[in-house]
Image (cartoon, rainbow, N blue to C red; front, top):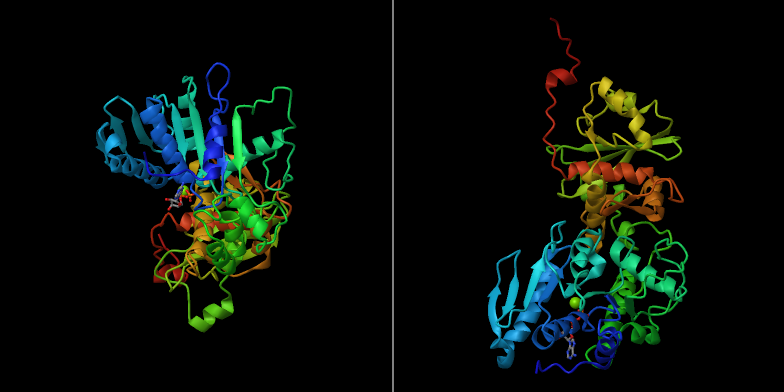
Length: 479
Ligand SMILES: Nc1ncnc2c1ncn2[C@@H]1O[C@H](COP(=O)(O)OP(=O)(O)O)[C@@H](O)[C@H]1O
Ligand SMILES: [Mg+2]
């Protein structure tokens, strides 16, 4: 009726993912679908959605995503499909296209709503089918935990999540995939897996179905068998020539993640997608050749961090350059904490320490907080939601820097301490997001923490720094 003939893998998937228990409930409460991009995941979920609504009579379908666009795009596709078939269009009662509250309602009462990824998203609703497209984009558990709870009270409910492979920041996808791989005895090894306790007696994952099409570990980028493993639509809607074109033009990590559906750069290669950190390199020499300087009309920000072993302190500086891009550098590093204050407040500092970010509590550097206040500085406490939030900001700047073909959004100078930290640091979950794990990282991660603090503060657009000529001239105040 939809004029879509399911591809063999799509048909196979539906037959198995919709298997029933003897009591008629679904065998899988959660279905995670991993296939390379452009193979027909979103289309398949749209077909499933319409079947559940029009044929199965499922009262409520909820689409969600960390970014609303993705869920709305998925919704739009399903609505357009339904509208294009007269026999289905007849049953459409209303289509609400209001941004942020898109909803499709059938004359028979079934609804398909898009819920934002907030703590409230989906709460109070009881979903029979919950859809999460592009699960790799979920860098925190907000959307997942808000909306998956809605299926608890529904006997005929399922959560469907589709994606191509993710990276270290894909916390939800990595966790679910790790649960499934653990149950199978880690057939692809443990690289990239979340650290889970060994499987207990309970085997609580039995209602989780992972359907993964991915190239076997160790395949070369040009191994056509690997292409076929990750692209079940190859020879149907996906052709070898377009994959070959991507293999020769995409950076390797992009190709592996998107076309071979492999979890790359997961073995202690740092929190950023492979290749993205080095792509953000802009050397001092290149900058000098282009005549790029710091934009002195805009404020610069310092970030201060101390190593886990308390032996090193790093001061990073983030500023805008005359090409309009943010840049981060390690401005100073030395052992022990005693040098930091004199260094920051030295009259030789060309950039006054007006904007400083550091952790006030719970970090090694926090022991310096009071002395900063006593010295008359006014540091910004990097804490609360900003802790994970600024990590996300930094991550997005680095990652999107590569995706946009050469347009680097945040640059760094390839300084060894920062390079090592950025390419080795481990992360740990915090609240709904993640942060760098100073203690668990194989090398000192605190230069990266200092950099993230500096950039995070810079991105909040702190007010400009007014430095009066008198202050700079060492004015003595008489009173
Ligand atoms: N069964 C099918 N028959 C024909 N074309 C399909 C089928 N499934 C998907 N497609 C087409 O393949 C393309 C990619 O599908 P999409 O669902 O967007 O892929 P993905 O979500 O995996 O990236 C779209 O143009 C879609 O219309
Ligand atoms: Mg898609």
